[in-house]
Length: 256
Length: 242
Image 1 (tube, chains in turn green, purple):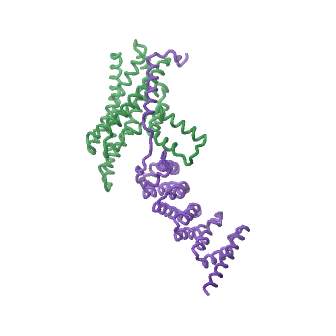
Image 2 (image 1 turned 180 degrees about the horizontal axis):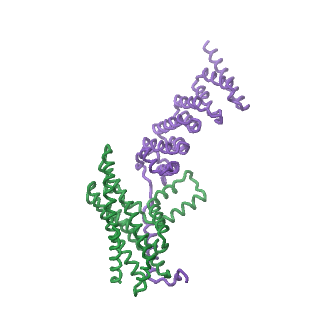
Image 3 (image 1 turned 120 degrees about the vertical axis):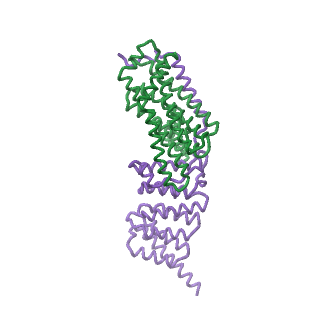
């Protein structure tokens, strides 16, 4: 199986390089550095912290968007060019194709996490930057797996990107929604409120806790606790596993 | 040709992977502590210009979301009075920012008068009442109900008659809309009466009755009764002095 997975992963990585995705990431980081340098000059205090926080937030959202767009458009191109059908017409398991693509995109995700993290070492202690970068890599892995799941199911650029954007925003805000839902103004919850709370809790069960990942506070205040790191690694492993299962389930049911 | 094969066509490992992933995700979520807002975490809000930029042309929508977010700092699970631990200086700025984004919104003032001003902490109560007073002065005809409640709080909770009088006088002076009930604009009279400023109260009631602003017959009767009562008390105290 590995002899099928590795070439697919390799060609996916080459595609990313030829798409100049990594160059784009470097440009994003350079633009972020320039922008935060400007803001740092107008700050009265905590200028380094401002620079670190804004650069981290900017590159985090930027690389998530870039990666999701790359996964979706690259897969849609494969559908349109019939590359996928050509590959699957060979004596190759669908799961090998899927894991090959996932491995390739995951390598791109790791490269993007590295490119995003390294400049932050200018403003924050290296160990804290390393943990932040590890968390970003985990977040990007989840986004990669989800984007792959969406594009294989929906096969359309707009709908897949919209689904990924919705998933990402909801995952980052679900805790805030839960807090709001759990804080009624009166002691007596109406039936409608109870239903809404139940739905929010049910959604939270199925979403990864992205709001607990890649926190800017880890860069400018204190490093995450070991339990937090363990938690985010476990969350990544579990969620990627779940998405692999869901995507394979869908892929194996597809007729080409 | 059908676009999808039946689920039975899915291999056992793929099904197992999905089932295990789902169980683990639910299990992991179940053992993760529930999210809780921290009372210490209410930060200084961004500048109004930054918020306007962040609203992407939807300041009212952003104001509503910010208000709900702010509320999440108050009502925290399992605690009924956690907001007394909030930083009220930051809270004041948050409420001001929200009002700047949505000046016609009443939610920040309701929260200030009915939630934040009701904490068992006099300093915080006073800061919220002051917030309501300042914001009332910017739009008296729309925001008078909150200052009326602030007057009540100043009188009955803080027992600060001077503060209550200041608010009631502002209500009487600046609230000019025709649909404002008379009780709101006549609070000053009764506070003065309570403070034994009977002569001023008498003059005010007389002036109010003569102005024609009161048209309700029952209200006229009530004020007339109060006027006679005050005059009786004035006569009584004058005869005592003699």
